Image (cartoon, one colour):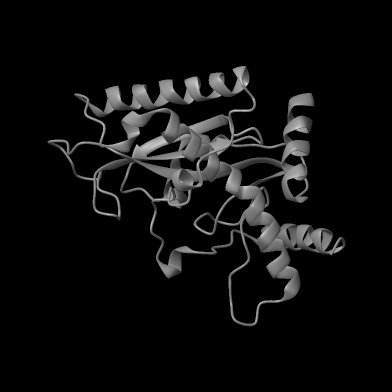
Length: 225
């Protein structure tokens, strides 16, 4: 419980977003073309793993899922053991981009429209400043392990997955040894979100409860404007 409280406090110090227990996103990891390559090509046209990860306020990996690159973030979250088993403390959330479905415990941005209200715009700003930690985490990770600058070339997807998993553990270990080593080069993370979303895949909502939960957070954030 103390760990959850520390994570929430760390996220809130970033931009004031309350009760956040993690930030989630996906990152494409290039791989060589397999003989059995069906399903591995991402929407950007190259074979890849889609790595979905949940990170904490210190840019450490808390949980992850790996799938072939043809699976987008929403599909990966919905069908992975990680996504199905994810739970956060009561009253808490994780933050995600518009590619994920709005859930009572997964808060996404409001749709960007021409007549968008100031309260929704302010919520989106604070949400973005908070969620960007996961992009920075991916940037740090790829910058530490330069083998990800080009397609992975191992004999099998299983071997590649083991390499990826090992680097995630090492990434966390390095941060634990040197907490100051958490400042990514902006060039490393600005373009990390590899998934290209169609308009119909953005801003989906699971339930009225999810909408009410997001509205409550929006109202809370706007009390301090």
